[in-house]
Amino acid sequence: MMTRSDDRPSKVFKDPRELSLEIVYNVMEKGAYTNIELDQYLRKFPLLVDDRHLVTEIVNGTIRMLKHLDWVLNLFLQKPLEKQNPWLRNCLRISLYQVLFMDKIPDYAAVNSAVELSRKKAGSKLSGVVNGVLRNIIRGRDSIKYPDPVDSIEYLAVYYSQPEWLVQKCLEEYGIPATRDMLLYFNHRPVQILRNNELLGSRDELIDTLSKEGIHCQASNRTPWGMQVESMEKSLEEITAFQAGRFYVQNEASMLTVSILKPQEGENIIDLCCGVGGKTSFIAEQMNNMGTIDAYDIYDHKLVLLANNCTRLGIAIVKVHKQDILSISEGLKQGQGVLLDVPCSGLGVLNRRADSRWRKTPDIISELSSLQCSLLQKAASMVLPGGRLIYSTCTINREENDELVKKFISINPDFVLEGFAEDISFFPLDREDKEKAAGGMLTVLPGKYETDGMFYAKIRRKKSF
Image 1: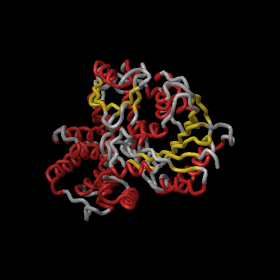
Image 2: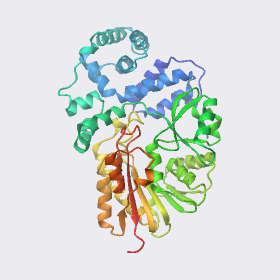
Image 3: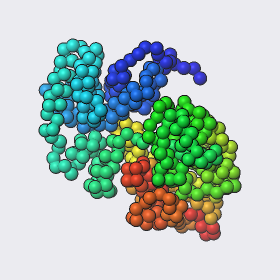
Image 4: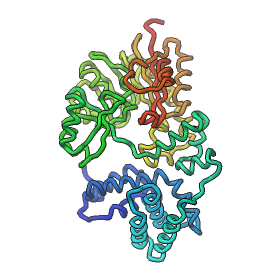
């Protein structure tokens, strides 16, 4: 593959805050995607590990907290933020994020950097505006007022920096306490979780190996495979343990999907909408690399990554298929277990992509639910009599989750919900969630168990009907 000239590593040193400003500018003014822009800049410009972390935090944090930052800035600006010079407003945004949300950065450092950056990008006259606005905010930060009352949609949307339609939806479906907890979690920096590859060794052995390579982890108390990264002296891709296939980066809520499927050695499992193979590879590990997994997706680049991941992890039982699953002929492929992790609104993982909350609309959900119904119906036809079907999403929206599954069950009498509380007995569910899992459907709310938000339904096809 040829490398674009503007992606080649540069020998030019750049200040981490200047890099941060340029990335945020490109996202906010040119429509760039945060994760892609961040990755390209970090590949192009050489930075120390701490500086890479600083850029990542400033960029992701600023984009996440955009609504909050803009509200505060407009309280202290004479002219609305949207009418300001584009470089000026984004310089104010990244600098205010450091002042309000990065306790380890002294106020004077954030202000001085902002003045220099604004002078360089917007001119010396506007740098005075930056200096004055930031210093006024610092002096008056304890008296900043947000919309009243504190349980209103407007307050929650501004304070936790979310679209109002999303806040309203969460309040309608889950109430104020749960909504506050979810909104808070969405603004936390994602915790990095590694999944031990049991085909190649134990979790304890891996933790020791990683420590020697500068990656310090703690065994999770939520799953038998998870390890939480506490600190890193280098990137994961650089270490020998990664190259040797000893682990895969995966949130524990995602791991639960495979535990609910409960794949067995020698089975034929079908993974629909498999993506880059996080769940596919875990299924293979749970099958002890014995049996067959047919993995389907429509995107070439995802299937290439899946194949590479399987090779790295030492997995040899996955057959890759590039095909729209709705076009699969009836009866062509069936398995004892089918996993359908459908495309969804992603409302359970809003902390993963900083700009995703600003790119979603209510219309997306109604469009998706129609597709999800069709995909579920097709997946059901691929389940052998007596086999099981796992329907999962990474959203908390009931229209895409339990409401959709109930509708499916009502028109397909040869399928029934099956409890799976015992399949994930290791996971610390509270009593209410255990009862839901025992009933065959469970929504794990974002942050409730320090994991992403996910929905699971376990559906059994009757042996005879």
